[in-house]
Amino acid sequence: MPIIIREADVEDAARIVLFNQAMARETEGRELDRKVLTKGVERLLKDPARGRYFVAVKGDEIVGQVMITTEWSDWRNGLVWWLQSVYVSKLHRREGVYRMLHEHVRETARVEKVLGIRLYVERDNLPAQETYRALGMGTSQYLMYEEMWA
Image (tube, rainbow, N blue to C red):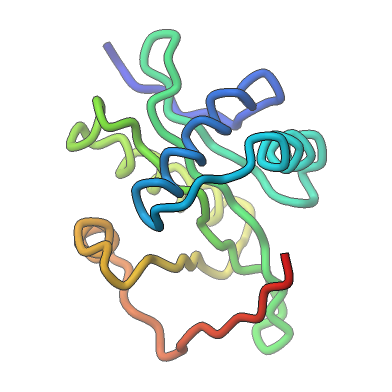
């Protein structure tokens, strides 16, 4: 059965919420508040200015996802896309699902004249790092710092 990549819509919210919960559990050992997460996913899906999700669909089932948010680069006078909320169902890993999502995002970004794509990955998530390297991504010269209040 072929895999189709498409932009997500509000009807996909429940599956995206489940995938985000699974990702947080797997990568950080965290349990996300389902009500807050659902509101956040739905808010983004209703307002493309906040970001976009792309989903991989096999038959009637969503088997993978990636969220895109934007960063304005004044130095480069253009947009950079951040890949976030990357997840592929455990049953469909090693089938090229993420590769298809990544290539779709890359091509969409080029068509939309985006300057490049970035992502962050957990330091210990070596399989993900290997995947990103295999797709042509490299480590950045920057370290990421944060200050979170919520």
